[in-house]
Image (cartoon, rainbow over all chains, first blue to last red; front, side):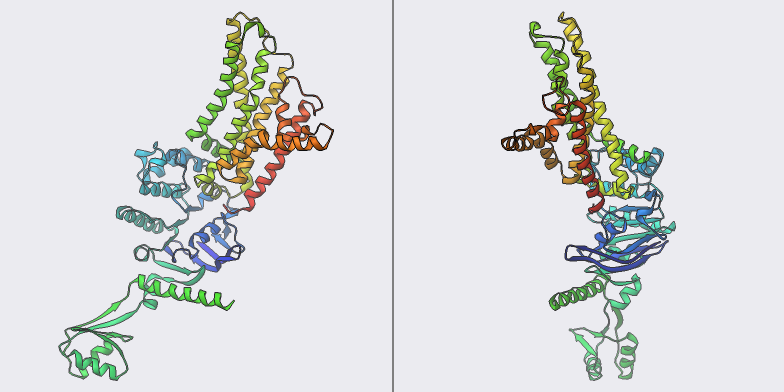
Length: 304
Length: 249
């Protein structure tokens, strides 16, 4: 499992990551969610020791990354699939990585097989499509059979087939008991992949919870009603102080449960043709939450 | 450490541009020597001629080898693989040391091969032109050893400069302009001010001088010159290694 505790990273006077703490459990996919520029990639670079954090720590099963003797056996990280020499073949790209952690060349052929690149193992990476580079990146993550997997925006720029492949690979890795942390700003994608969410905005933790909790807590809910006596029901509801938006055939009741509306209709003898609860998407929830964090940031800037 | 060295060796030989640069670094000095002994008037050929030609190409050879040193680190930054390297081996000093060992060996071996090929094929050419031996001068042995060590040192200097600039064009420019331009200008200015032979304090020029069969007057001698240059290479190396450890990748 991963424990991030009070991670802080500043570039000059700009605070990129601000006292960020979260944990990533084994056996589930944890989505690392935030708008562009919110500090997801910086956090990941700090976690694996590429960038130096000014405060805090990131532990992998209790140990900092820098203390791992052969880190590829413990942590597989893919920050950018483009980080491969375009003049090197796929096989040689994996071979130097394997050699650095004492892994045999046989393991390289195994992971090429797992990601389905064995046919193009001797082709240079420069000739690869984005999807193939992403597969090569996943192969490099799998090299040391690590218990922790970290991926930064793995679905970025992929076609639907590639996205589905990544999604299934991540679920498969988590089902084997690995801790999987995957960042994205694609919220709809996150809803499909992730079980847990770590949501950040402007380098600060907004929330860590499950996907369902996040939606129910933040997504807007409303009740839609269709009725031949719509006007009556709306008048009664408004008299009780409810917020109602109407159009020709339906009315939307905000801030109430469907039971209340149903009982209200029955008490007033109103016939209902439809009574349903609508939930905003994860996208809506996310935009709402991060919009707040942006405003908050703006205020704190103004306060200086 | 052995694993890191193996990894660095695989990196170096698995990129075609590195191999091409190495071939160019061998072929250019070799061709100059062989063309010279092929077309030179027989009357002008003495017993030092072949070794003088080989040593004369030394400056070009070691600078081209320095480019390999530059590439071995700057291509990691230009292609983004430095992040994979440092993620696979978080001990950055170990990464630098592994590259250091590989480049020192490559620099020495490539220079040694240039000397061996040039003298062997050069002698055959001279024999076929009915010029009897010996073709290499009596002092050429120690000069060849100095040239091999210069091959290592300039490769390491290229790598250190590359680590500092992180980008191939600026590192190669620095490496080439240092001996050709900077030391020339600084040396000329200093010699206006001081009567003493100040140009010997120019590190690169002094290092290159160690490869001459006949050493220039007023210098540090062959091994002294080499040692002086090595001290500068070590200085830049220490700065580069500290930079690699300190800076974000």
